[in-house]
Length: 133
Image (tube, rainbow, N blue to C red; front, side, top):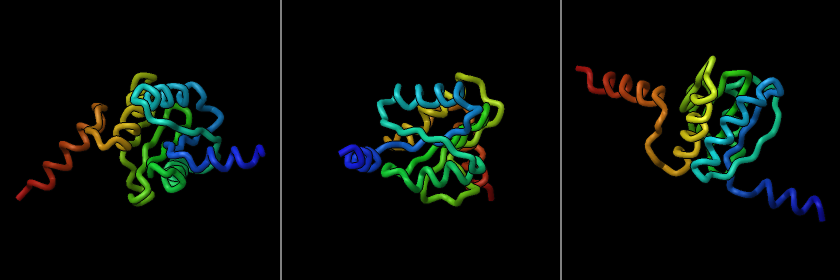
């Protein structure tokens, strides 16, 4: 009976959040951001490199979005992107930036514009390159 419940839980549509054990404070902030946007998530520990862990989490998520957290570094990934091309990647992030990153992971699921200052800067640089002669 218990195994059946676990199987059903793992098939629930959730954002997968993987974390290193040194990142519990950062994990709390990222999860708070996801929760504020109303998107369900599952957390599990990892020892894998950050980008690879985020990509693997996205590949295992029914919502196609994964987050990896290590210390004050965090990464949001979409399963159809290359491993070395995450949607967002922040280092030395404050608690508020980690919460915004969690919100942006949720917004990616809901197909809404991202809200972190980092994502706006990245988008404007990309649009400048695309519109260059």
